[in-house]
Length: 164
Length: 262
Image (cartoon, rainbow over all chains, first blue to last red; front, side, top):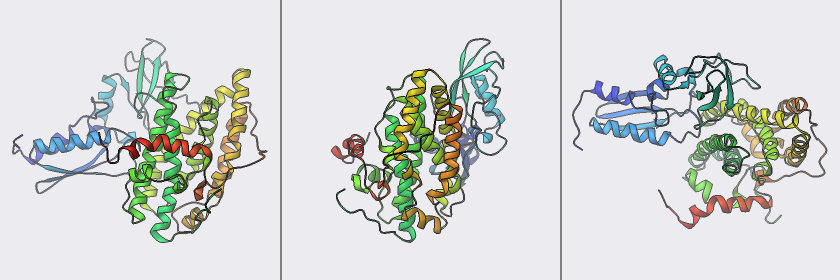
């Protein structure tokens, strides 16, 4: 592919707009796992952070960043940063809206400290009908970052992005 | 028990490497056991749950073993350490290598081990080793979910039917001989604690027992404390008969096809 010379603004925006491979309705920027993206001459320096230690999507995200950079005529150095640890509190308002529109309940905002242990009485709104009468089916869903719930009102199952 | 274990305590970076190896091996071997549940759990949600918990453990192991290779000067990668070491070179406690029992056994093991890891990683948040501290910041949130999951199952099984109650009680007794080893102050951990990088395992004991004890009480079960024997030696490379079989399963593809990729 011939590299197309584009402005630096374009490549930065293109990297920010890369979708998450497992939840493609949200971009890596809105998800909060893109920690920084900077231009250094003709190289792009990108820092990402994993959602969970074992998140299998990180390799795909790294490859996607390098491909998008190459499409704009840049080479990308992608590094992984563990600290400070990612939290769902870094998810943008746009990202939360996108999840809800897609039928995934967005994560609740954590006050501080680690996750509460025990049977929680937290209210989660059904993204399909808006009812708060929902119940948890499984704390662990199709990916590390999601739990499985069911709406008691409209009877539809749905996923919830777990607060972390 | 065959060859005498190597109990030399390394210094400096090698000490940090030896300490990371213990934590990394615990996580790696437990990830392998948890992965065995996929397609074997009592319901599909549990296939997902135990698979996800195993994935968290694997992620922690990858970061820790990568750090070992950086620190010990050997240049070994996470894969070299996982696939190309022999049984005597693994430093995990024997609890995590025990064969998958029934579901109650796994929930008993998960409750104890995740409660132990929760206290451990909380203590490592302030480790002077920046990688250990970073791993702990991520892991402490993950293992809180693991502990919560095990808690809910132990409550449900203990306070369930006569059958589930009895099997949960039997499971608590089955893991008992392997618990003391978690809290043994081995030379490497003590030296790492002294250096501000690690934590003395004995210091975690009371908090872990209090946490597990509260769950067991609420589940109408009894916390057993009278064991006729106890495991020891995992931290110096002495393992139970289960370990060789586990490694054969985990390592044979990588060893049969060196350097293979997909």
